[in-house]
Image 1 (tube, helix red, strand yellow):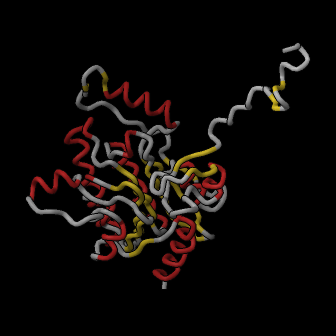
Image 2 (cartoon, one colour):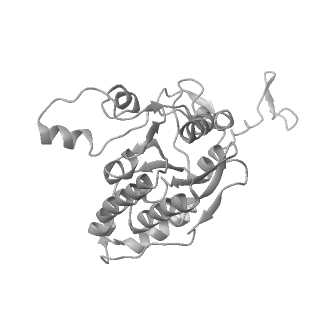
Length: 281
């Protein structure tokens, strides 16, 4: 083959194929369709084929929910400590915190502040699933209670988006204590006549489910969200009963009266604004 025709053979091009850019496609975890990542993002990170709601971080959640540039965060620099000097195998709690902070860009598993949703003032709390799986430790409890206090002080509704693996084992009984503390704070909000809207996203489990997540005046869930306390295997082995399929999904929960409604992500802003207006009457 001469130098001239090295790039062709029998009329076919022999030029190297261009590589597909990284991050262009993604696979849906539910229907397994290959999707354009940009299409999914334009659809608020919801699969256009099967309506699967992908997990999103707190920055994206705030962007979708709050009016543009309206979120004024408080206690953003509050970080946890290591009350138990916790170590698991070769990793300490402090090392795990640092690793998750670098990975997610978040300092803790909850962000709170004042915001507006379609012009309605609210106190907003958003859990960060990418920081220790949104687990509830001392800081999450403190931020939640601070949000409740601000809601009482300013007479504003409290909206909290829950996404959690439960109580944070690294803080032991300190973490478990946040269940009682957050529940007591909500009792104060109720006595003051305040409104608490709890939004459950995938997953909402463990100590968060067993405390503030299920104490909302109105409890909303995104479609398909996993909602429960312990895992299915643990429950089955404890009560020795065969469990119904999908018993920890949002759809099962609304059918059996554990939550009030299922709202698609694209409709959350409008539904929360409607509920705020309704409860003000």
